[in-house]
Image (tube, rainbow, N blue to C red; front, side, top):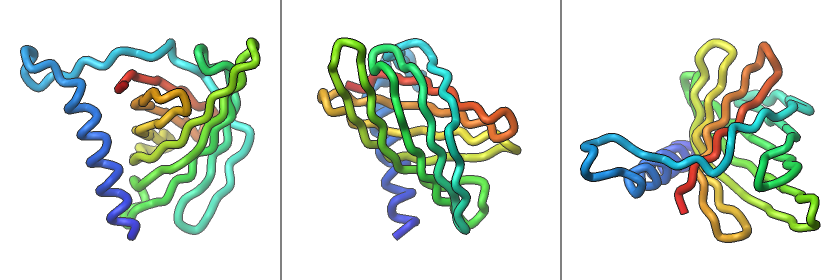
Length: 147
């Protein structure tokens, strides 16, 4: 089951990136940013035998104040695996957004990089690249438009 989820996550990312490919540019991808990078505060990390859960909060531009949870499940090599999660955004005008995501991650030293496909309640679709630095206890979210 875990292998299937991992392969499905990678397939979703590949399909999303393929949809954004510029045929005139060969194999280069042109992704448009949804907003500027967002720096998030890590509020907790829960370790589990085969992964962990990272909770964050921060201001994310168009999504307002966002709370998000990333649940990582390690693969056999313990340096990569799958990630699933949820996010909720609260805007000053009273609007609310929610999103769920799935993807894959890899770790180099203390840096975890996640690539997630995010389905947002307003119908938009993002590719989020999340960088968690375990030494610095920081998270950076870069959101790109898929739809």
